[in-house]
Image (tube, rainbow, N blue to C red):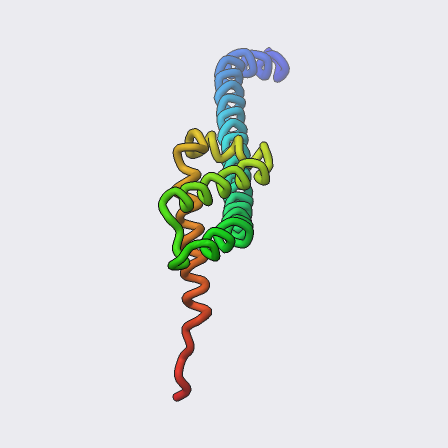
Length: 148
């Protein structure tokens, strides 16, 4: 028996083990690739949602500002006491909602709806929060700190 015969018998004996190890290694590699692909998909989804929220933030503020400049100031000027009635406030909110829907990109709207559900269910609350932020901003700007 020569060294070649011995080497062939060793390879024949180890071949099933080598095949099993190779199969396990390939399986582990594919699992790792799946995890990495899921991370990429998750990162893209997170980045898309963040971009959509940033756009919603800007468009929401713009909607409140535009409605306030055009409609609310006009309604307040016509009012005897300078305040809005419930109907006028509802009209202003409808105008802000319409502005939002027509100024946000379709992609951002689709992403927001996928994340939070139908826009009608959360948009009014979102814009009411923007109104509160705008009021806080005006009040904060009018506060003066006495010199020490």
